[in-house]
Image (cartoon, rainbow, N blue to C red; front, side):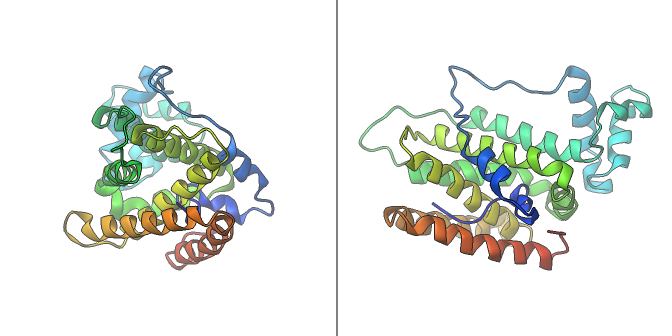
Length: 251
């Protein structure tokens, strides 16, 4: 599996040094249901942010949506001071809650000779992509917020957690160094599929699913090639950055 970093976290590549981003992606934070992740948001934050998401369709990922959400939740507009990152808090809330919801739809399968991890990865990743589908018209604004230097570390960490969760729920139990390659590559594949999705007008995002399937197949082939994976990831990263720039995201 391989292809660039993420639209919502890939923007670390515009920094002079890539090492901070690579360190975050390489640090193992493998999720399991024995140590289930809980929501990092307080009840007040959750109430405001969940209410604010309802305004994203009309007001996008903006301070206005955040303020309207606070009022809907019964708080004064000044309550948005709870979120120092401003409108980015809405983007992060969406990313985190969608990741956590994956375990509501998928359970880690028992090991068996018939277990097809690749197909599981495809299904779980597509489910996650569809979680962003309602906000595709506004996703360029989300990408712009994610490209801001102050937001990059949060975006990269969330990308790493998403890759962990998908691999875990798919049934992967790799504990060798190959796990790091799988994690980084899956993050890139998901990233590319998300960017593709912003331009997909097919019914039910069928073209995005086909795109995701092709990238996963390519990744599987390159994984067998070993040392070729890192080189291919780097090449694809450049292409993805160019794609984001062409859509107005500053990287």
